[in-house]
Amino acid sequence: MRVNVGSLRPVVACLLAGFLVVGAAQPAAAAPRRAEQWYLDELRIDQVHKISTGRGVVVAVIDSGVEASHPDLRGQVLPGGRSYGTSGDGRSDDDGHGTHMAGIIAAKPSGDGVVGIAPGVKILPIKMRKDDGVYRGAGIARGVRMAVDGGAKVINISISGPGLANPVERDAIKYALDRDVVVVASAGNTAKGHVAVGTPANTPGVIAVTGTTKGGAFWSGSVQGPEAVVAAPGDSVYNVTNEGGYGWGDGTSDSGAIVSALAALIRAKYPDLNAPSVIDRIIRTARDAGPSGRDPQYGFGVIDPMKALTANVPPVTANPLLDPAAAASTDPGATRAEGADEEFDVTQHGDRGGPTDQQVMVVGIGIAVVLVLLLGLVVFLIWNRRRYRREAARAADIPDEVLDRAAQGGYPPPDAGYAPPPGYPAPPGHAPPAGYAPPSGYAPPSGYNPPPGYGPPPGGVPPAPPRER
Image (cartoon, rainbow, N blue to C red):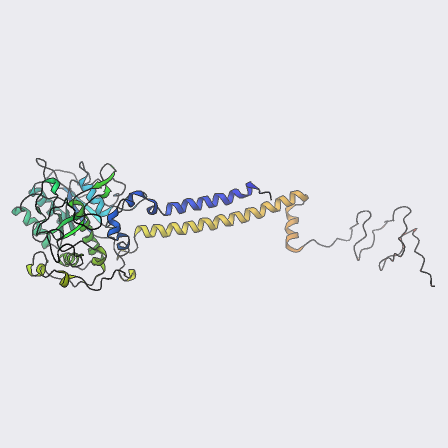
C-alpha cells in the first residue's frame, strides 16, 4: 500500500501541537526541583493545598529582606519596610536568608520551580541590619511592631540569639500577641554555638520550633530545651535563594518558616479563629514523638498540617503558651484531636478562597488541548475530502460542480439529442436520431428482433421467419 506523506502533514501538525500543549500542562510532574522538596511529601502538602493555600493572609518575614524579583516569588511580596530607620522597603536581600524563608512559606508553583507551604499568602518583608555581625534585640523589636502595624497576622522570626529577650523585645512580642498575631521563632542551631532555645523563641507566647530530619527524627543540629513547642523539618530543606537561585538550607530557621506557613493555612481556612486558637490547634494536632507528652526535643510533637486543618478542635480564649494550666494539660491523652482521620472529604474542607491558581491552570490547559485536537481533526477531514474530490476530477477531467451533482443524486438520464457512440445500441426508450443509418452492408444478426417501436433500418433485410417442421 502506498501512503501519500503529504496527506499526513496536517494530522502530524495537529497531534504535535496537542502533545506540546499536554507537555506544558504538567510541569510539576517532571520538575526536578519539586522532587528535592522531600518535606512537602512528608507533610502531605499536595493534599493540604486542596483545603487551604493561605489565601488572604499576610505573613511578615523579619529577616535580611526578600528578593521580590525571584521568579517563584513574583507577585507574592509586599513592599514591607526596614527596621533600622533608613528609607526604602524590604524587597531586596544581600544575604539570601530572608529570601529562602519567604520561599519556604510562599513560593508559587510555576514551571520548573519550587512550591511553598502556603503559596496563597502575601509576604511582608521587614529588612534588618546586622550590627557587629548579629541582629540586635532592638531591631527585632522594631521589626515586630512594623509587622503588626503593616497588617501581618503571622510573624516569622527565623533568628535566634543567646539569653533572654530584653524588655523592649518582650514588649514588642506582647504588642503582637495582644493584637491577635501569631508569632513563630526558630529555637537555634548548635552549629552557631547555641546550646539552648534562644531569644525571641524563649519568650512566653511565642511558638518555639525545633528541627527534624527526613522521616521525623530529631535533627542533631537543632538545640533543645523546655521552651520547645513543636518540631518541623529542618534538615536539607530545598527552596529559593537570592539572585534567582535555588539551594538547600539546614537549620531551625527553615523549621520556623514551615510552622509560620502552617499558621497561615489555618488562618485562611478558619478566618474567625483568634491567634490563641490557631496556636492551640497546631499544638493539639501535633504528632507526639519522643517521650510521652511535651519534651525538650519535639515539644508537643511534630506538626501535622492535615490534622491541623481538618480536626475538630474547640476554640480557646487564652494562649496555651501563656496559660500554665492549658499548657500542662497538653499531653497525648488529653490533647490529641478526635475525628482527624487519615482520609478526609475535601468537599467539606475546601479553601475559602476558591480553587487554587494551579488547579485553574490545569483545567484550562486541559480544555485547550481538547479544543486543539478537535479543531485539528475537523480541519483535516475537510481538507482531505476536498483533496480527494480534486484528484478525482483531475483524473477524469470533470469539473468539481459535476462531481458535486453526481455525489448528491447520481447522473441524469441522457437528453433528447443524445446519440450513442458507433457500435453501441441506443438506450431503452430512445429512437435513433434523424438521418441515422447503419453501417454499409450491415445486416441484423440471425434471430434479431428489434425493440418495440423500431423498424428495420433502411436497406436492412429482416430475418426470415423460422420454418415449421
